[in-house]
Image 1 (cartoon, rainbow, N blue to C red):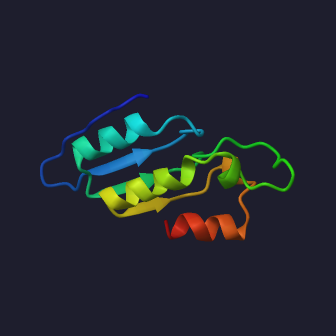
Image 2 (image 1 turned 90 degrees about the horizontal axis):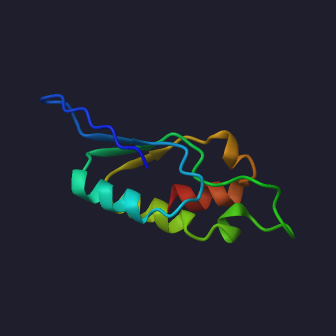
Length: 100
């Protein structure tokens, strides 16, 4: 994980996350808690994409993704943009992650 911190006096503390690809999110959540951002922006590619097996959603096979979104939402208002790796999420998946 690479962290870059820019401190601008008077500006909100924004955390921008991208390309996490279903890795362990513990370090990311620990970092977010320590920096206490006022807003979390996730620029896609949270899941690792592959064709679903047996019609299983990536959210079923990558069980740490939903708890990650919930943890982010507990820290600060969180906004998520779909990346190319989220192409296999269906409407039900999107509904689940939009209301963690």
